[in-house]
Image (cartoon, rainbow, N blue to C red; front, side, top):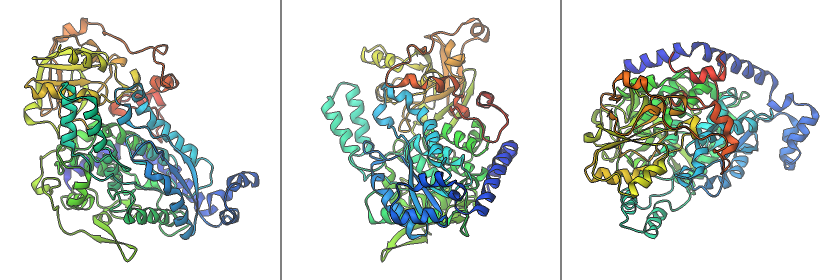
Amino acid sequence: MNPVIQEITDRLVERSRASRTAYLARLDAEAEAARLRGPARASLGCANLAHGFAAAGRSDKLDLRANVKPGVAIVSSYNDMLSAHQPYETYPAVLKAAVRKAGGVAQFAGGVPAMCDGITQGRAGMELSLYSREVIAMATAIALSHDMFDASLMLGVCDKIVPGLLIGALHFGHLPAVFVPAGPMTSGLPNKVKARTRQLFAEGKVGKDELLDAESKSYHSAGTCTFYGTANSNQVMIEVMGLHLPGSTFVNPRTELREALTEAAGRRAVELTAHGEEYTPVGRVVDEKAIVNACVALLATGGSTNHTMHIVAIAAAAGIDLLWDDLAALSKVVPLLTRMYPNGQADVNHFQAAGGMQVLIGDLLDAGLLHRDVLTIAGRGLDHYRSSVELKDGELVWQERTGGSTDPDVLRPVSDAFSPDGGIHMLDGNLGRAVSKVSAVKDEHLVVEAPAKVFDDQLELLRAFEAGELDGQDFVAVIRYQGPSANGMPELHKLTPPLSVLLDRGQRVAIVTDGRMSGASGKVPAAIHLSPEAAHGGPIALVCDGDPIRLDSTAGTLELLVPAEELAARTPQGAPLTDAQWVGTGRELFAAFRRTAGPAERGAGIFALNGHAEGVAAAANRVRP
């Protein structure tokens, strides 16, 4: 094992000892009760149980009444507006049949919301996006709260959906949870062409029809978007954590292999219950080693910066106190092994064809960068995930992939990495702490020192660009009051095309914000997720137009180059919207979330560290141990 990885893991274990011990004590008590009781519904009263099977078919009703066969919950993010989730329409029937054949009874326990950041970019709905993770976690808890189930099947792919499902599942940590992917759409218009068309539109060189045509050819069918953003970063991390069946992550929808893997997931959920020989509670799968493995995979693939918040929130749900300091330390020893858009021109289908997860995991294991001795839904040991899967005579066959990458432009071994360190850096300085995604930034743009141009809304910057007010000058765009407590921390991906135009003209530009950038962003150097945020009185609220700022992603620093005594004399400029102003598109319904959201580096959520004695507010605001 790499000694630095081991040291970071040991620190994480020690820091989390009290909360993790409390979490596992509750899990173990519930697990022991499950073993003694039999199927969970056996504890229900007659009226409760009758409600639980009233609508079931005759065969399932008899099985549910008999209290012999394990019950499996299906929790789905299906909707037919979103391409990534549309394939889930047919999954419940497939899963129910598979579970029945394996000796269990599956019921559709609940649906969770699934919103699309691609649709809501630059819109009011984006201000609900991050909060939707907490709603999904709570909706998952509601689905599992009926005491009818002995395992769960989680159907989700994108952005906040998978973290929300996992957070909810971890609060029922004694139940096994099998995550069931839907797979990416086939490759469409090359990402480079799409990005170029967006820039041409920003410059006014092509019209809306040409832009819509390019976007439609890129996002063209059922399945996950093929660029390597938050959705596909989700999928990589979930497989490395051992919550997918090996090799199932990037199999395209509506193929024979995809359907066979879905059926296998249903069968596996039954095999993992407390009443079988392979009891595998999700709270035991997601331990400190699994969390470190997920972080390593995120860094090695140059994944989405959104996960610097999601993985912290997921860890907290399992009683694990992960810090940005851990990610920063890991980034120094984890090399960048992939090039997928926006970090390259390939998409996830090209990554899969080059060897995909099995080659990536195998090489990281051989280099001592992943913990091998972990519990997974495939059994103990991450070596299970070195195996690729195929159909032979209608049966799934897993075979260890012994060869390496077939395309070194997309996937490389540790010995020939694209970069010696990870694709995500942490920044620190007198402006606070921030995240910088460097895997898609050219070397000459990793350090930017320029005067600030301050905006309290992304629309102000877009208007300034359209008016030509940003032409011919170097600057650092400071976009503030975009944090979780200000307005829900929306993604600011709409800023990427215009700022990319200025970058290509030879201007030195960068972004500093307490908001988020999309998982698809990366060309423009940026310090994002700045904490503390402006709404909490963070130093970003003191920045004035013309103040020199130095963003150094190489050194990991972010500095406002203004004398300390001058800063001390300043008062915060601007303000977040009030409750009375924060209305429309349902945003007023989330006022309580806005008031209780923690800082970005603590996951930007509203839930406390599971198993910890501290209250929600204290846990959310505790930045360092």
